[in-house]
Image 1: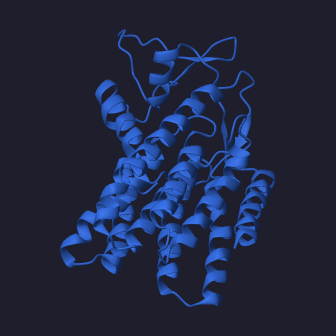
Image 2 (image 1 turned 180 degrees about the horizontal axis):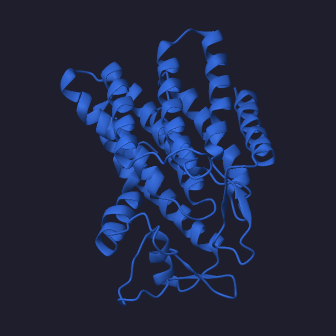
Length: 311
């Protein structure tokens, strides 16, 4: 199976590379670089290709309707994100926030209804799926931040699922994310977009839900402590009017190429996890900030896996 996982990894790399060369309409400006390069965006949508190829292979070995349901759920999340990514690129109206939330809720409820151990767990599991997808969506902003943290958590989830029917699919997900990360680490050649963050977050949640273990789902939330700190204890507490940080550039780009915390008119700091790292260590280069974040995410995952006796 190692050769198969390697093929999935290279297929992911190839799809991302092809998208970066063929995509001419959906791009973003990397505002954290002095050169301000244009970067191909919404790359996450092409990660569906290696995912479905892997699912098709598994189905030829032994038919499993759960894998198909998983693929459809992840595809729905990726498409929702893609529609949001393209709202300024096509001659269409932006997707209202309420419409996006409703679509995510519907997809989450359907998947939860299929796999919930009882009717009483449908809504909590739907919230679990939507929550993990949203955490993956907000824990981002620098080259490799989201992709690297997503890969680390995908590996941790693979360890949790070792010996289950979904272990191989979890390794496939990790290989796909790694293939994307090969082009997204500093300096990024592609951006994942909402299609990528929602795909990765929903896929991680979906793997845990299919295992039908409430205890495992509850335990997995510990892997997201850095995400919880980032959103609830930093963004919402220090910047509740603009937690998405769209009204002002989130980081100050110095002439040295390092990133610093920007000054705000009212003198109050607006923090996120990356700015917390800057606050502790001072101005850093983008890759240094992301490396610290990766270490924190990996250390958090390793700690909980170790104290639980899983490692």
